[in-house]
Length: 195
Ligand code: AP5
Image: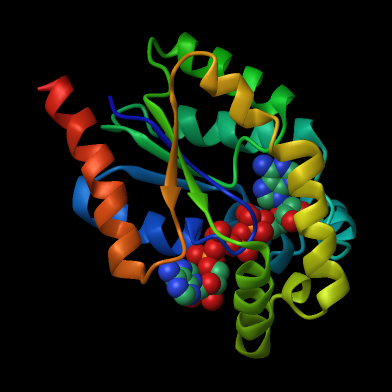
């Protein structure tokens, strides 16, 4: 199996690039942000709880997102591999993911980290907020709060994987096609190793 984490701050292009990667490599896309937004639109108790955090740009509690990922892994026993987008976002989530994958006799292959300057992130998210209806893109304060959460809680996840030699930085501020080419080079090497 090839299991990728697409890592990076809000607006770095994780969702955009995940869509291209699943088309090319046939992996299953697990985005905790998308899963949470589905819960919110279905007005489930989990969604109602999550929205209190998301609207402020804060992370949802670990146990909520770990539970969602665990169910999705169980629901896809025949998968060729997964691409995790927006998860793990804390060291506790990374440790939980390692355990869940070990139970399935697999592991994270590599973490690909999209590196984009902060002013470009803010510009992208505020632009998207004009048309997406995503409440957490609608104000500069909330966008900045998401970036602060990333630096405080998510950036340390890089060290968790770097110590196993599984962390790669990718230049994320080119065009979508340029970023995709860089990601494919890394993924092709992994796929070749597995053949
Ligand atoms: P989530 O949905 O994961 O949002 P995020 O990480 O803030 O990421 P975004 O979707 O905003 O950005 P992205 O990196 O995917 O970029 P995208 O491709 O969309 O999380 C939302 C919230 O849910 C969190 O704040 C938290 O509350 C909660 N949550 C989710 N997961 C959680 C977890 N594990 N633990 C706890 N809480 C969790 O691109 C952004 C924009 O840029 C788009 O308009 C796109 O068209 C544009 N763009 C993309 N690439 C380029 C490019 N190369 N050039 C120019 N524009 C580009």
